[in-house]
Image 1 (cartoon, helix red, strand yellow):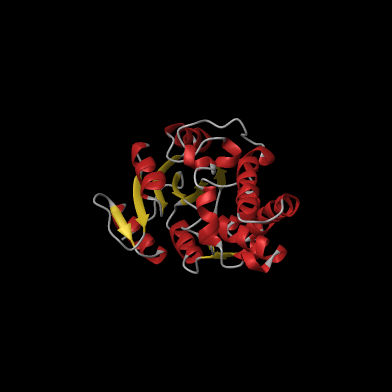
Image 2 (cartoon, rainbow, N blue to C red):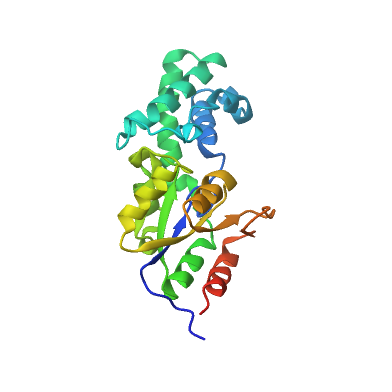
Length: 239
């Protein structure tokens, strides 16, 4: 039976934690940078993390941010909080400022990112069945460049970064922005690892959703790994 579809329908994918991972996320990058300056900071990620609570733009997803398209503006609050955390933990301010700046470079270094080994096969299988792909992530403005450098761009038509747009998932305005860019084509699925940002946000926008995590949600579809997604979508859309 033919399961191909019209090539005007999109799957929207989250990025970090879904298609690719960086061990320790940003806090891990900050710990690495701090450890390069002072080895005493190695292993202190859990101590550093509470100082960063509430500083990331997606912690204020209900707001439209003034830094849309401004990478330095996006990073300002995060690096200021990082510097403050290091000072509070005993690092001198001059060194802490340098470390915070370096943490950004480390976080965005493609060498620190690992594409899920099941990501490309899943994207390719779905593409062969007629689906097109976009990435929508609460992430730094540098996301399109990072996606390109880690080799995902060949399967993805658009990369939407909240840091460039100035809106965060699960904002309805962000999903409307994506819909306007894709028009006249249409997004049908939202896939991600965050029940609030990806799943609740996607469902509110009228998308079918798949939660990528081993425990099942109370409502909707959930899978433990990316390889389970193509059969699920192809079966759901079988004529």
